[in-house]
Amino acid sequence: MTIYSEVLRMALASDDVPGSPEATVPQLVARLDAQRSLLPEDAGAPGDLVERMALELAHDVALVRLCGALGIEEHLTAPAPPLDERTRLLRLVEEDETFAAQARAGWSATHAQVGVSGGADASSPMYSES
Image (cartoon, rainbow, N blue to C red; front, side, top):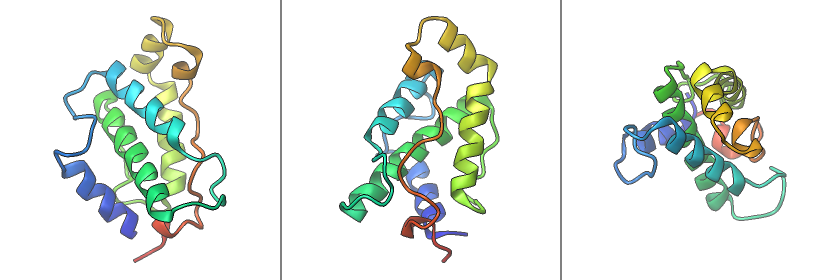
């Protein structure tokens, strides 16, 4: 288990994290899209590590909550390795019928394809084994 996984588990249990589990799929998709837009394109770019970790955490909370709403089993809270699990989940979200129905119902092209996010890579400290 990674330290990041444990922090993610605590964030998901917190009432202080935006994007409640009771939100609708369109709300959760919009939240994930908003969090994605904040992630840096280059994981190796200079910047505040704590801020970068907070952005990654907010993105993954949004992703886990969307997966829950879509009935997609996730393992980001017990990953091996987390970046591969994030990629798998994003692919499954894109393939989900409910998500696809939202895309057909008028979501913009940016909402219609979640895609693999930028940001942290496997060498990031947040993905190190504890």
